[in-house]
Image (cartoon, rainbow, N blue to C red; front, side):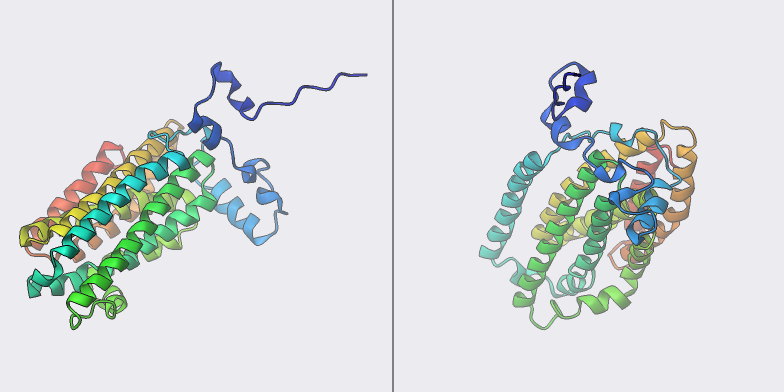
Length: 327
């Protein structure tokens, strides 16, 4: 009788490293059972709706790699460490909000700036929620658990900022009850000219089902444009007018954005080790970048020195993609 084989250890797929795996490797790598059978994702028949979606838009993506599981998050974040880091970040933001509330910060804002916040700041929760929806989609569609984790943490970041924007909306509505806060945000999002470039960009991206093209549209075009225009340029305008709370909150949100840029850059670098992928990414970038530029121009037109703000924001995002070799 053949002796039974000893059971494999949980991290046997990492045995080739000839060392004890790190916490990141143990809890992050090779975890997607939906990729074990390329012809039947999610262990369903190939003709089910979800299987057809995954087969076409994940497995059939023009961006291909023989080992997506080889990708690693440069930060090596896991759920435990993400929560530890963001607990400190949230405590910092809570402190900002509490300090400024005690000092009756919102009561002293200039009326013209309050109107600008009602038009160009608080409606941003619709934009941030759209980015969060994309990240949630990628949690289902990305081809490796190490990539899924990055999108999951990005999704968490954006959900936190949706909540913070909603909180600020209520605070501003109490300090300035006749300025439209908590009542006119949807109208601004849907019809105010400054938002229409971003609205077109994210709405088109959300119906781009190919996981890799949506990654380009959101992480390489839309999010950098939001960071450069809505956070950086609006944050600078806030600092110039004396709205230190809006400026500090923008800075805090950019900390999350920087982490997203770093892992997104690493994923591009990993993908472009395969022949043909650079050309695919450049083709998609060329398709989406003009929408990003128009979004920046439309939004910055609502700021003082809007032309200069738009130039600075576009220079920032184009420099980022140039460093990736995509422009």
